[in-house]
Length: 547
Image (cartoon, rainbow, N blue to C red; front, side, top):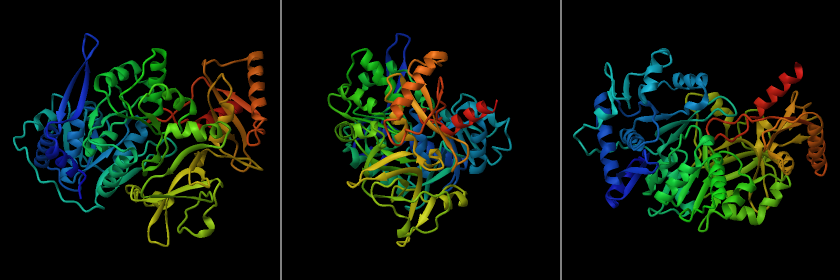
């Protein structure tokens, strides 16, 4: 089993169909698009594979991959899969300290990257000391370094894909580190294969569908399905700063049926479309992931998608997808419950995945025993089991031990790091990260249910629950980001705070929250630009209170 065999198969079935489409904005303000058919992508990936093999890369070698979205990105990635070389994907937006730490700990022997990374390498030689083979996207190379352009000159166009055991490592994907230290997640060929099958089944995708991925790695799945992947004109490392006008033009030009990415992208696109009275008739699926999606955003898209709806899969780098739900179902059945503080419904388990809720604990759990499992409607820690769940972290046995629980079937469960509950119908409700729950003397408060109440106020853009002090004796506080961005003071602030407290007192789980703070702009995660960094807000408030 090798996930790259899917590309080879697709190239034989529909060789002349576009596999990848790339946009270029002209001086006239319109777009020109370059393409690779499945046959051309197969040939280019073979050329890259042969060239990389001649350079010295071999099966089992780990190789850092830092490429911007392009026609070359999927070709290089599938080339590495074909060789059995293990690409390492690290989010460059995680910050210099974490980035350098991840690179050093992953111990790669190859580096295929934009030219800037090769210059940075010379300032951090110890971090990159394991690198033996270098490839640049730039025009110039030095020493034994090769350029991508040079690799494309390879004459051999065919290749026998390396045979791989289903459990063999296919890639290393690093978590973003948004709620802790970034960790390398080991993806096997079997996990990739199962994820591709599940996503295809979940959304009823066929090779007639067209993809526009707001998250670059998602295109690898859709290309493997035989879909055309149209790369959008945006910086995927900064989804919250995307230009919605450009994305809407890409959608108009390429008519994708399936678009995916952070809610930060689609919030901007929805607002632009509403302001300009634009609908998106080609789109059947708007798939948003990375953070809970507001009822308001589902509602916005209801009138923008005459032939489609929104979807919100739940999962993590270590387990994707776990569950999924449509915006259509949410608006009909769960939206009001979420707005009243029940949590965010993220649907039922996808095929091949099991979900359980256990008693929340910060300790290592060696074995899953019946006494740990909670009944329906009880909030606890979410754990999952299935073929889409990764087995371990790269060279971090202690972190693996903390995150996995063995059971009587000699399989394992992954601890999602989230809290929530299953209702009587088997629907999973998300209540927040385990590290973000607030533990007072008498109660446990959960971010998503509490924040939903404060979000009812018409001036509130979003809110964040924080616990001041140490767990077990925390004082709950709510931080507000207003829609107008104002940082109120004096009488206007007092009025605003009293209005919020009046709303909170109507609900049993928020009636004790008395402390209110304002923030002009919340700190968010680097990958999706939408997960609120509540721990950083807590640190900022506690530092402010000390001064």
